[in-house]
Length: 209
Image 1 (cartoon, rainbow, N blue to C red):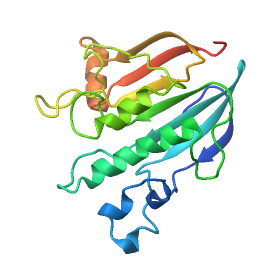
Image 2 (cartoon, rainbow, N blue to C red):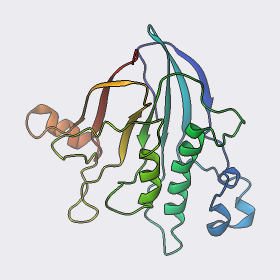
Image 3 (tube, helix red, strand yellow):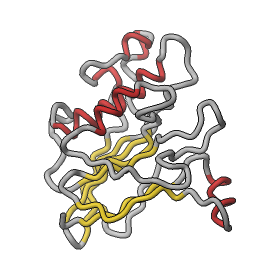
């Protein structure tokens, strides 16, 4: 996972090492051997709160790449971990809990990354991402492309094309435009298909509200 910025990066809060067992209400003990609980991270890739020092003032990027809620058995271990990775951001944004006891800094921000769950279709605990999308502090621009709201081009009919990648600006920001880059013709079509089964999502925002 990488974050590229044309502006300087300020304070970085790295939550990648947070243990799964330390999230309030977690499901770790239900699906994890006891001797692994002291080392098993919540976030399977990374989770950051990064301050970007823009000419219009600080802007924070909250970002992570959640576990795929598949490739497990009837115990739904990956589905439970994915749900808790998403719940982490819900609790953090709402100020209900954070690993270091401090909530997010004041000011504009956006939650972005791969949550790996579609709110309407496919596997995963959809109600968790639905609750995240309903937070008062967030807005959902609902970017669209040739695949509609979908951001991943997966095999049909299962799992099919799903919306699993998100950019959710804070509700105090003005969204100018948004889209999913899903080219259907031209040179970019082959490049996008070769690069990943995910498609690029972009949101243009006004930091001055």
